[in-house]
Length: 107
Image (cartoon, rainbow, N blue to C red; front, side, top):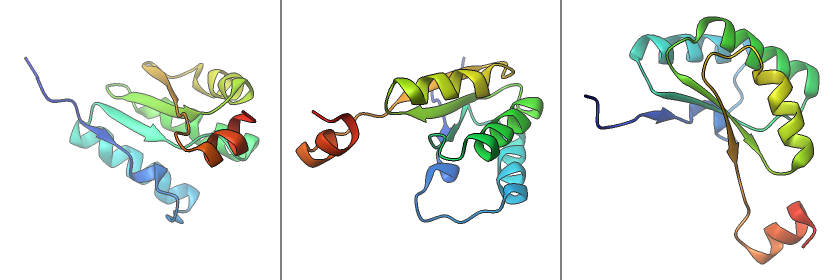
């Protein structure tokens, strides 16, 4: 029984500038390595990011595909993008600083 779960956040890094093709190849290699979860950033560009998630979902069968969300609109976008994934996951990202809460959640 596997006790350690591996979640890879390579594609979530803010300063990474991978092309669409490179992102697909990274996800393909992570699936080959047997990671438990491939974490993807929140959907910024509806068409491009949804296409990326659906493409990754077409070949990632063993790992969870996790998409970050901050608010209700993000959840709706993530649900639509993940509807073809075998193991979808919505990852709620909540800001913890006062400035982050005010900016992101308007609290």
